[in-house]
Length: 142
Image (tube, rainbow, N blue to C red; front, side, top):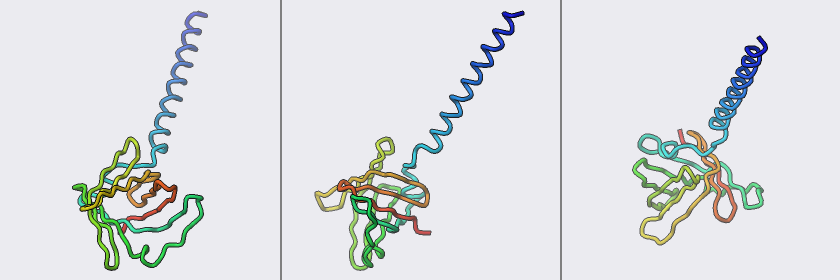
């Protein structure tokens, strides 16, 4: 009888451990990755993002200028983008590497490519970190 009780205790311990590991995996996979999918950037065909808040490399809030408040970034599902406001418009192509959480903008007709770390990407919010350490928080236009 001791052998059966011992087997049952071992099995119960194993099941508790397995359940705890599964729960940990689910929690990490649901809440740990703040950089969403490529389709969150562009929606089904396109999505427009507007600057909400900006911070300098030291983490201090920078006040958005009126011109920055007017600008928007429209991301198209086919990999194109248009950025502008007031009287300016820049276009190009974008790529998003979800594994490394990097968003790259290649400006049309220019030898300029901007690459950002994607700190957060959801359907409503995009948080980017530039190479100089500054951050931009953008919200999707509804």
